[in-house]
Length: 350
Image 1: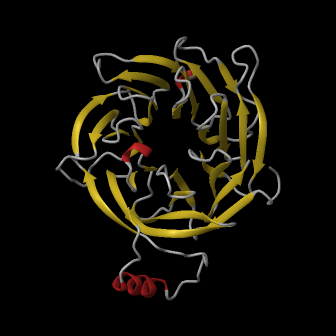
Image 2: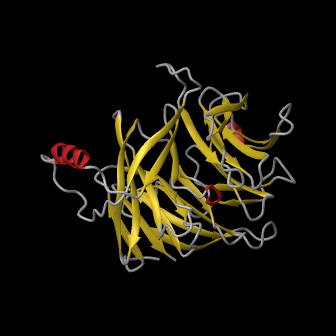
């Protein structure tokens, strides 16, 4: 994967961070990319592969840098996106060009700025449908660090926060259906298993935990990091739900957890990165492939076929010019992987 022959890139004009693929059938190879700027005003773009280039289909402003953006699952059969920052928000994409007033406002705002991306084919507008503040907005809310949209129940979204809680929302009614203290410290990530009952979370207390919405009186701690270093991300293998992947703050390795045998990782991806990992993504159509990316500007694809008897091996790698902030495997065409790095979002053809 070295070189540029298998890479399509899109220049954003800002630090590209968040990333999510569109799951809707017939939508083409379309993904969302969000900015990370230390300002109140941030940006989200919808980007689509058109022949041999990437073009902008929609763009909108977002308050604060989104900690997560996510397209609706395929069963939702709608062009919806959720994002998290100070609150969880729900956005709707409509395939219609912006109004003349919006065009004039955008032109006036950008008249003194250089054109950073000539590949603009804007044919959609985005509007905010709901803010999930529980009906009690205030300026002292706890930042939402992450979220996940249940793929089998499109009404269900889970969020995690620095206030140690996990919240389950009904996105159709905007009602909070459940909130619980999930960890002893900040919660950094949440991931639903296949089905409508089970999710995993991880956080600053160094643990990864499993919860069952049918039995919320207790949880199962499936892994604790050495010296209880914070765990930043947890990802569930949707094709083989016995496996979770996770990595910690400043970690250069990914641990693979078999939930049937908690506490001790069944495997460790420890020879592919020389600097901290930022993101991981399971392959959508293969149970034993995982992608990782990080501060060393490297994206790796791992083969876990022979776990636990043989250590995972790195089968493919790509070297970017800047640290890679996020990586996401295309759910409808597993020959494409998206990454964000520097001011670019890129598609890697594997």
